[in-house]
Image 1: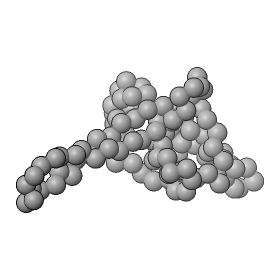
Image 2 (image 1 turned 180 degrees about the vertical axis):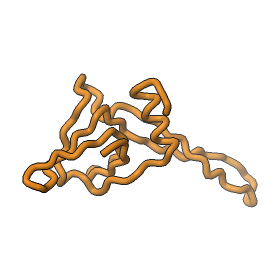
Image 3 (image 1 turned 90 degrees about the horizontal axis):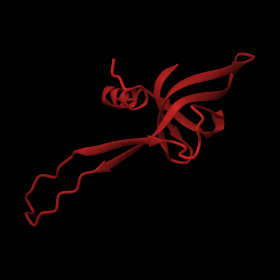
Length: 104
């Protein structure tokens, strides 16, 4: 595959270099290489002005998906995957910079 954004049954969003494990023409699992948990926090603007326009900025942070391991590759079974999608270009760049120290 490539760098994908994965939604898990737990509700976690993980960005990773994802590869399919295929056997007998069916997907048996996915290998996440250097997976990073994606957290989105909405910026809060406190104001007493009822007519103020709400700020729609979102702060994104990446952190290791499983903190207490030295493993770079983690096997995930298909039954834990809700969906796999293409991440925004900015998320791909953040991921590459975090895990490789570079941006394409």
